[in-house]
Image 1: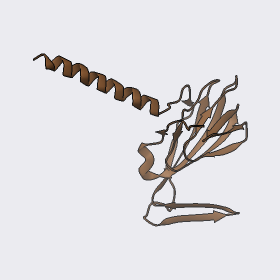
Image 2 (image 1 turned 135 degrees about the horizontal axis):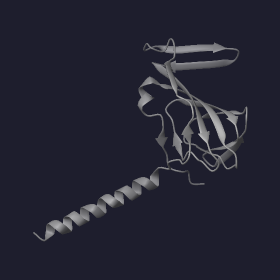
Image 3 (image 1 turned 90 degrees about the vertical axis):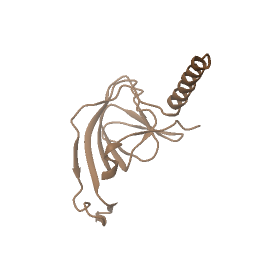
Image 4 (image 1 turned 180 degrees about the vertical axis):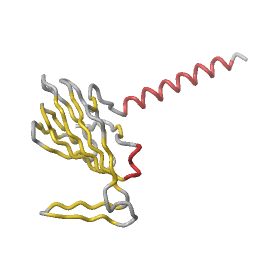
Length: 158
């Protein structure tokens, strides 16, 4: 009977250790807020199992299977950051106001009003300035990825 409390305490220590390790792997963000209602639609021509291919003026869009598009605005107050993460599909961002820094791997770039960038693979966005930044976001992703818009990622070793 004495072993039961010892096993319970040992199990609690093991659970606590797993929680600490899990928290250290992901890098959740801080301070960002969605400032408009998101709107999602299925890309026309992508509902079947075939390949959707459209191109015009040197721009090409191709997808395999049903593809969704979601748009919304995201606000980054001064000091806010996204944490390291990735998304299913491709994200296109336009800076409406303020400035942000996008980091991919060990490379950083600063973007201001009217600048646009993509988010592909692990990345982090921060607002190191003293003014609020507002970003217009367009996500293009497989319809099956709708339930997972963000995947926490570990920070790279630079």
